[in-house]
Amino acid sequence: MPDILTFEEYRAIAADISPPVNAYVNGKFMRPKSDRTMDSINPATGLALGKVAACGPEDVDFAVAKSREAFDRGEWSRMHPGGRKEVMIRIAKLIKRHRHELAVLESLESGKPVGECALTDVPETWNCLKWHAEATDKLYGQVSPSGDDALGLVMREPAGVVGCVLPWNFPLMMLAWKIGPALSAGNSVIVKPAEQTSMTALRVAELATEAGLPDGALNVLPGEGLDAGESIGRHDGVQVVSFTGSTEVGRRFLEYSAQSNLKRIVLECGGKNPAVVLSDAANLDHAARQITYAALWNMGQNCTANSRVIVHRDVKDSLVGRIREQMRSWRTGDPLDPANRLGAIVSREQYDRILAYIDKGEKEGAHILEGGSAIEANGGLFIEPTLFDRVRPEMTIARDEIFGPVFGIVEVNSDAEALAVANDTCYGLQASLFTADVVKAHQFARALQAGTVSVNCYSEGDATTPFGGYKLSGFGGRDNSLLAHDQYCETKTIWIDMSDDAADDAIAEKSGDSSR
Image (spheres, rainbow, N blue to C red):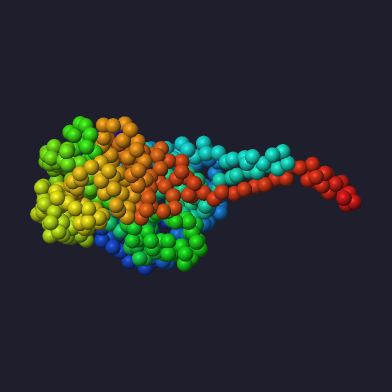
């Protein structure tokens, strides 16, 4: 079960940890063929955690070859679904057993608060893998309504070699979202973690081998996007790529597919997600807690962060006062201290980007109510949680995905205007809606252009519900739920002629009668 340790215990684990740094291919760690490395930096201290393998095209070629060999051998791809289920459950159990190590490793590399890693990310990782494992022997093929003269079988088969390209904001959870359904279907999987956060994926691959996953069925290639990531996207030996990250990079994978083997591409990209507070919203204390959490969770480095609070003028002042009060309980500091709810920004690049957006918000006329500054902390990358008021829909901070602990209040004069402003974005990943009217809850939830709409709360759903977006937020499929399995499978029709003529022909051929 999820549990949490003390600051001293987490620091002791961190001092004793031996981070994995080499690629993991065909059941063992290996150095990149070029011998190139990249520094993994702890964003809370600015100190290097280790030199991680920087894989390139030649490493991708090798990993694809080993993945295809494993797939063709059939140890995993043709294993009975019940057998695959048992192996995946063992992987989940090993992740649970090593939960404290994984929570610390993820916190050190990403800057995430260790309490969030321990209570959310790591438990969600093993639960996700277990959920998809349990689905493995419960997904049926189909028989078509073909009548008595034919039998149409609709079969599910693994696609082959699957590339999973991960973001840096939820390294473990996104790993599970991708490999859970991909391994369940029987594919061989190559994971390219984000450059900033490679170590937990490498450790999970090692645990997967310990759990009995055949060599070559799960490989991890750390590296930069323009080397390892692009090579996976262009490789003719890869049948599916599932990518979570920016819309800009997602577009490139569509280009790579078009320029190579037309591999299937599944994209979960950016968001500029609204929290829509209607004129009749009740329990504003609850709404404020949910909205603050939605904006600040993981330092706002979240594709579903509710960074636009679109609120009716009748309830605005009451809501904003409560949000400001909630923000004061979000303490920023050392990520290994479980008392801190906000940790470090993942990289210097992202840190500078967030501060530039804060500056631009002020210059365009928005007013800072809370925060707005960097926090000096011995080389660490910390930013105060920041709330803007007087945000207009055309402002940069109301249109761009900031990916930081920054959100703004957009005041509207009617519920209809709130809906129009919420939908006035190129994105459509998630939206939160607050209303006391059950009819409005249904009407507005249907009208909001987002892949997930939560009512009177902030939520992304759970493992049973599909996750993905409208417009520039997504393409080609969904993570989570049984729908996620479809994108890693090929659908095959087997058509069998059952007519009397076919039976007579077969009998005649068997008896040697060629007069027919």
